[in-house]
Amino acid sequence: MGGKVFNSNDLNATMDATMKFVLPTTNPQLITDDFNTINELAFQIHFISKMSLGNSNRAESLRKSAKELLSLVHEEYNLN
Image (tube, rainbow, N blue to C red; front, side, top):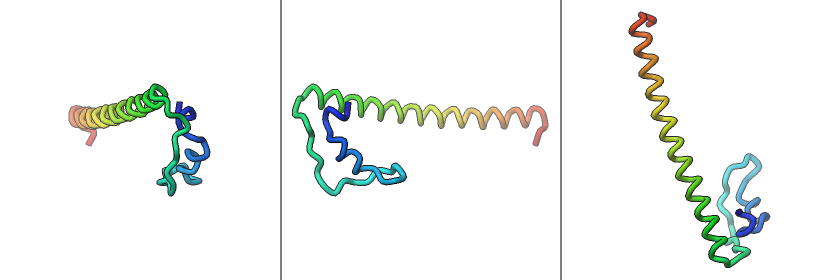
């Protein structure tokens, strides 16, 4: 989807050799002015962002529950 909105060379310039984001030194121009295409890309970005945040929060909750369960098992079976 991004290839319909951004030039791939501009996108490539935003990543360094270790695949870390680097702020562009220029103002990359969009290659389309089609509202529907830009809106679809924006939607996908927001969707992935929200899903990633939700997954991170869920993982943290599961990690906390796992630690609590391990603590209970150690206490119940005198494994300390």
